[in-house]
Amino acid sequence: MRIVVTGAGGGLGRALLAAVPSHHDVTPLTHRDLDIGDHDAVMATLVPLAPDLVINTAAFTDVDANETDISRAFRDNAQGPQSLALAARSFGGVLLHVSTDYVFDGEKAAPYDETDEPRPISGYGRAKLLGERMVRELHPAHLIVRVGYVFGGGADYLSGQLAALRAGASAAGIDDRVGSPTYVRHLAERLVPLALTRRFGTYHLAGSEATTWFDVLQRCVRRAGLPGDVTRQLAADLDLPAPRPAFSALVSVLMENLSLPPMPSLDDAIDDWIGR
Figure 1 (tube, rainbow, N blue to C red):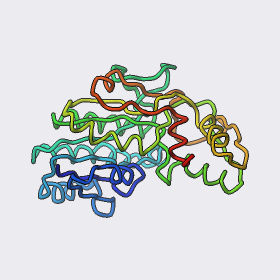
Figure 2 (cartoon, helix red, strand yellow):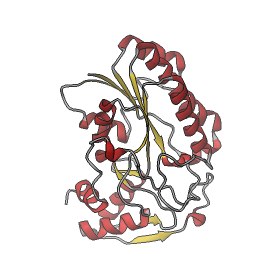
Figure 3 (cartoon, helix red, strand yellow):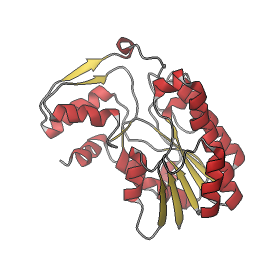
Figure 4 (cartoon, rainbow, N blue to C red):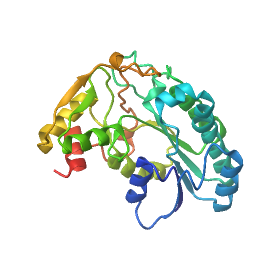
């Protein structure tokens, strides 16, 4: 199968390139190769390639910057997926688009499944939700995959905190926001198999446990025997520009019926990540 991966230079993109079986023909496109917010560039790049599958991991993911640069937020996170959907429709390829848990408002206080109504509270969440709608309305052969609290990609929050702990410095984790910590490699390993089912629609694909970054960092310290202390933070103390959902954990009512392997436990994911 011929696969194009957009956003191939990001943490998830790199993990995906490492996870795709070698018998597939993969074309990686970093942001330098293709800015998905540039409609003409998307059409000029993808249409001649005409892959069987496009996996979009490209996004403007800085939540606070999305709040202060709303034009770029919607250009990259809504109109970018729109262009990808139009391109994929033109050559009959499948589009797998990665979205976010931040399309929910956090008021449910229990994990969100695919039947829950999105109600984003930030510019990032609104733009990502519109991107989902663009994909859904423009191209029937799509899979929208909502993820959240992804770690282990190298440039993510948790990777930075782990590096600090390994150096003997202190780390800090928010203890009053709950999500589904998801090891990037475990996520990446399941994207192509999900696409191959051709069971088009919207899916939640995230770690198996709902918890906080503070808890994850404490587990890393215990399981790896790391020096350094973990400081408990509260969201309100950070005074960030963009609001975030207090509870955005994800669960799926669909994935277990697709014969894909379940996500490992969080402790197993941490052990896999730190090489324990």
